[in-house]
Length: 176
Image 1 (cartoon, rainbow, N blue to C red):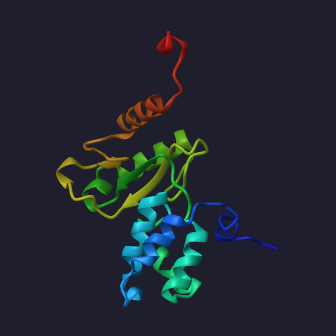
Image 2: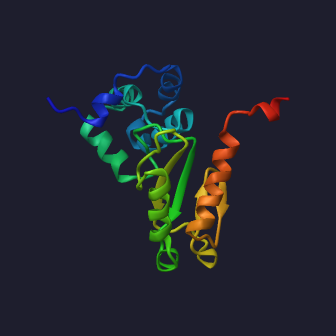
Protein backbone atom coordinates (compact mmCIF):
# COMPACT_ATOMS: atom_id res chain seq x y z
CA UNK A 1 0.00 0.00 0.00
CA UNK A 2 1.34 3.40 -0.96
CA UNK A 3 1.38 6.10 1.72
CA UNK A 4 1.18 9.80 1.12
CA UNK A 5 3.07 12.52 2.91
CA UNK A 6 -0.07 13.57 4.75
CA UNK A 7 -0.68 10.03 6.02
CA UNK A 8 2.86 9.89 7.40
CA UNK A 9 2.45 13.27 9.07
CA UNK A 10 -0.78 12.25 10.79
CA UNK A 11 1.19 9.95 13.08
CA UNK A 12 2.80 12.88 14.87
CA UNK A 13 1.66 13.82 18.35
CA UNK A 14 1.21 17.49 19.06
CA UNK A 15 -0.50 19.60 21.69
CA UNK A 16 -3.76 20.63 20.04
CA UNK A 17 -4.76 23.08 22.80
CA UNK A 18 -3.60 26.15 20.80
CA UNK A 19 -5.61 24.95 17.79
CA UNK A 20 -8.70 24.41 19.93
CA UNK A 21 -8.28 27.93 21.36
CA UNK A 22 -8.01 29.44 17.86
CA UNK A 23 -11.08 27.53 16.66
CA UNK A 24 -13.07 28.42 19.78
CA UNK A 25 -12.64 32.13 19.05
CA UNK A 26 -13.87 32.02 15.45
CA UNK A 27 -16.91 34.12 14.49
CA UNK A 28 -20.15 32.54 13.28
CA UNK A 29 -19.24 32.82 9.59
CA UNK A 30 -16.02 30.99 10.34
CA UNK A 31 -15.79 29.20 7.00
CA UNK A 32 -14.86 32.54 5.44
CA UNK A 33 -12.00 32.74 7.96
CA UNK A 34 -10.25 29.60 6.70
CA UNK A 35 -7.06 31.27 5.48
CA UNK A 36 -6.57 33.51 8.55
CA UNK A 37 -7.22 30.45 10.73
CA UNK A 38 -4.57 28.46 8.87
CA UNK A 39 -2.14 31.38 9.22
CA UNK A 40 -2.72 31.56 12.99
CA UNK A 41 -2.14 27.83 13.35
CA UNK A 42 1.01 28.02 11.25
CA UNK A 43 2.24 30.89 13.44
CA UNK A 44 2.01 28.51 16.41
CA UNK A 45 3.66 25.42 14.87
CA UNK A 46 5.62 26.94 11.89
CA UNK A 47 3.63 24.56 9.65
CA UNK A 48 0.16 22.96 9.51
CA UNK A 49 0.25 19.59 11.30
CA UNK A 50 -2.23 17.02 10.00
CA UNK A 51 -3.94 16.46 13.40
CA UNK A 52 -4.59 20.21 13.57
CA UNK A 53 -6.00 20.16 10.05
CA UNK A 54 -8.44 17.43 11.05
CA UNK A 55 -9.78 19.75 13.77
CA UNK A 56 -9.98 22.68 11.35
CA UNK A 57 -11.91 20.60 8.82
CA UNK A 58 -14.41 19.49 11.46
CA UNK A 59 -14.81 22.96 12.99
CA UNK A 60 -15.26 24.78 9.68
CA UNK A 61 -17.14 21.99 7.92
CA UNK A 62 -14.52 21.87 5.18
CA UNK A 63 -13.66 18.59 3.47
CA UNK A 64 -10.10 17.33 3.57
CA UNK A 65 -9.86 17.80 -0.22
CA UNK A 66 -11.01 21.43 0.05
CA UNK A 67 -8.68 22.10 2.96
CA UNK A 68 -5.59 20.69 1.25
CA UNK A 69 -6.65 22.38 -1.99
CA UNK A 70 -6.43 25.75 -0.25
CA UNK A 71 -3.17 24.83 1.49
CA UNK A 72 -1.54 23.65 -1.73
CA UNK A 73 -2.61 26.84 -3.55
CA UNK A 74 -0.68 29.11 -1.18
CA UNK A 75 3.05 28.32 -1.14
CA UNK A 76 3.53 30.06 2.21
CA UNK A 77 1.28 27.46 3.88
CA UNK A 78 3.39 24.43 4.79
CA UNK A 79 2.24 20.88 5.58
CA UNK A 80 5.68 19.65 6.59
CA UNK A 81 7.86 21.07 9.31
CA UNK A 82 10.38 23.49 7.78
CA UNK A 83 14.01 23.83 8.69
CA UNK A 84 15.06 26.35 11.29
CA UNK A 85 15.77 28.86 8.50
CA UNK A 86 13.54 29.26 5.47
CA UNK A 87 15.46 30.46 2.41
CA UNK A 88 13.12 32.42 0.13
CA UNK A 89 15.02 32.78 -3.12
CA UNK A 90 13.51 35.37 -5.43
CA UNK A 91 12.68 34.10 -8.91
CA UNK A 92 11.16 37.37 -10.13
CA UNK A 93 12.26 38.53 -13.57
CA UNK A 94 15.16 40.72 -12.40
CA UNK A 95 16.48 38.07 -10.00
CA UNK A 96 15.97 35.29 -12.51
CA UNK A 97 17.95 36.96 -15.28
CA UNK A 98 20.70 37.94 -12.82
CA UNK A 99 21.29 34.35 -11.74
CA UNK A 100 18.72 33.14 -9.20
CA UNK A 101 18.49 29.68 -10.84
CA UNK A 102 22.28 29.31 -10.62
CA UNK A 103 22.11 30.24 -6.93
CA UNK A 104 19.36 27.64 -6.44
CA UNK A 105 21.55 25.02 -8.15
CA UNK A 106 24.50 25.94 -5.92
CA UNK A 107 22.32 25.57 -2.80
CA UNK A 108 21.24 22.16 -4.09
CA UNK A 109 24.86 21.13 -4.76
CA UNK A 110 25.87 22.00 -1.21
CA UNK A 111 22.77 21.22 0.88
CA UNK A 112 20.97 18.73 -1.40
CA UNK A 113 17.68 20.61 -1.38
CA UNK A 114 15.45 21.82 -4.17
CA UNK A 115 12.56 24.28 -3.74
CA UNK A 116 10.06 22.89 -1.25
CA UNK A 117 12.63 20.64 0.44
CA UNK A 118 14.41 20.71 3.79
CA UNK A 119 18.00 19.59 4.33
CA UNK A 120 18.70 16.45 6.36
CA UNK A 121 19.81 18.50 9.39
CA UNK A 122 16.49 20.38 9.40
CA UNK A 123 18.43 23.63 9.27
CA UNK A 124 17.37 25.01 5.86
CA UNK A 125 14.19 24.84 3.80
CA UNK A 126 14.42 26.26 0.28
CA UNK A 127 11.48 28.10 -1.26
CA UNK A 128 11.19 30.28 -4.32
CA UNK A 129 9.17 33.47 -4.51
CA UNK A 130 7.69 35.12 -7.58
CA UNK A 131 9.03 38.49 -6.44
CA UNK A 132 10.34 39.77 -3.13
CA UNK A 133 9.89 43.40 -4.17
CA UNK A 134 13.49 44.60 -4.14
CA UNK A 135 14.49 44.33 -7.79
CA UNK A 136 17.25 46.91 -7.40
CA UNK A 137 19.13 44.41 -5.22
CA UNK A 138 18.67 41.47 -7.59
CA UNK A 139 19.30 38.65 -7.16
CA UNK A 140 18.09 38.47 -3.58
CA UNK A 141 16.88 36.12 -0.89
CA UNK A 142 15.31 36.26 2.53
CA UNK A 143 16.87 33.82 4.98
CA UNK A 144 14.93 33.52 8.19
CA UNK A 145 14.07 37.15 8.91
CA UNK A 146 17.12 38.63 7.15
CA UNK A 147 17.15 40.12 3.66
CA UNK A 148 20.24 39.57 1.51
CA UNK A 149 20.60 41.44 -1.78
CA UNK A 150 22.98 41.45 -4.72
CA UNK A 151 23.98 37.87 -3.95
CA UNK A 152 25.81 35.39 -6.13
CA UNK A 153 26.27 31.63 -5.68
CA UNK A 154 29.45 31.88 -3.59
CA UNK A 155 28.18 34.76 -1.45
CA UNK A 156 24.99 32.78 -0.80
CA UNK A 157 26.96 29.75 0.40
CA UNK A 158 29.04 32.04 2.65
CA UNK A 159 25.85 33.52 4.13
CA UNK A 160 24.33 30.06 4.68
CA UNK A 161 27.60 28.97 6.27
CA UNK A 162 27.25 31.79 8.80
CA UNK A 163 23.77 30.57 9.75
CA UNK A 164 25.15 27.05 10.04
CA UNK A 165 27.95 28.27 12.34
CA UNK A 166 25.48 30.19 14.51
CA UNK A 167 23.47 27.01 14.91
CA UNK A 168 26.48 24.76 15.65
CA UNK A 169 26.87 23.43 19.19
CA UNK A 170 29.35 25.29 21.36
CA UNK A 171 32.92 24.08 21.05
CA UNK A 172 35.24 23.45 24.00
CA UNK A 173 37.02 26.74 23.20
CA UNK A 174 33.77 28.67 23.45
CA UNK A 175 32.92 27.11 26.82
CA UNK A 176 36.44 27.37 28.32
